[in-house]
Length: 322
Image (cartoon, rainbow, N blue to C red; front, side, top):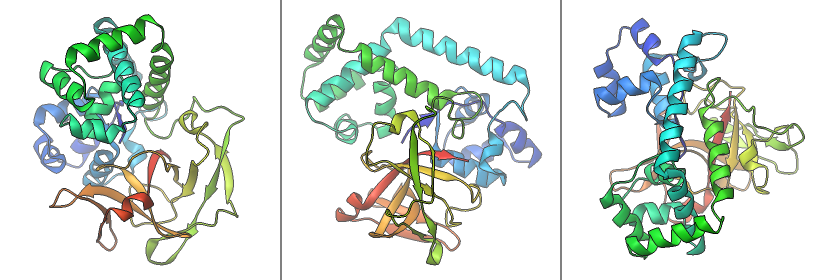
C-alpha cells in the first residue's frame, strides 16, 4: 500500500502515556533508529502501522497528525524543509527518471506492481517507492528489478535513457510528483484533500449491517463527496461509509473510505471484502503463517483466510477521509 511521510505528534503521545521508544519499536517490529525517524517525520510509515500506533498510544488516529490547530509551527516548517531537501536530492540523483522509466517499462510488458516486486524479491511498498522516485536503488536491487522485467541491467538503463530523451517520461514524473504531494501534505497525511477538484465528485455508499458488516446498494448512493485527484479518471472507484467498529476505535464513525477496485491489494492495506454482491467486510489485510493474505477484524477478533478466488473480491482502500 501507499506509504507516507508526515509530521506527527507520536512522541508527545508516547511520553504522555509513559511508553518508551523501545516499547513502540517492539509493537511495530522496527528498530529504535526507525522509531526516532518516524517521530521526527523523516521515515515513511504505512496505513496499518498508523493504526497500530494509535491503538498502542490509545488515541484517535487523527490526533497523531500535525496541523495548524494543534501543532507548533516550527515542527511543520522543519518537516517541510526536510521534504524539500529530499526532493532536491532525488532530482539530482535521477531517481525520478529511473522510477518513471521503470513504470513505463512495466506497462509496456503488461506487468503489475506485485509481479515486479515479487520478481525482484522486494516488498510491494519498497518497489512502489522506487517507481515513485522516492528511494535509492542498490546495484543488487537494480539487477533484481532488471531480472523481474526480463532484461539485463544495461538494456534496462539504455531503454530508460531513450524514453527520457524522447520526452516519454515527463508526464509520469509529473503524475508521481502530484501523487507524492497528496500524501506528504503537512496539514494531514490522510484527511487533507487540497488537490481535489471542486467539480469532481464520487458516490458514497454503505449502511450498517449485522456483525459489523456494511451493506451496499449501488442503486442508492448515500451522498456525494469531493473525489481525490488520483481517482477522478477511474470509473469503478467509489466511497464507503465506515459505519463499523470492527477495525477498532481509532477511526471515527464518520470516516469515509475511498476505494479503487483496480489497485492490487497487499499486506498492510485496508480493504473491502465482498461477502456477496450487497454485503462487505472492512478488513486489515495481513499475511498468515503460510505467507498468504488474510483479513483481520476486531471486537470480536476475527481472522479470514483468503483463497485465490477471494482475491478478486478484495477492493483496496486508497484514502481515508476523517
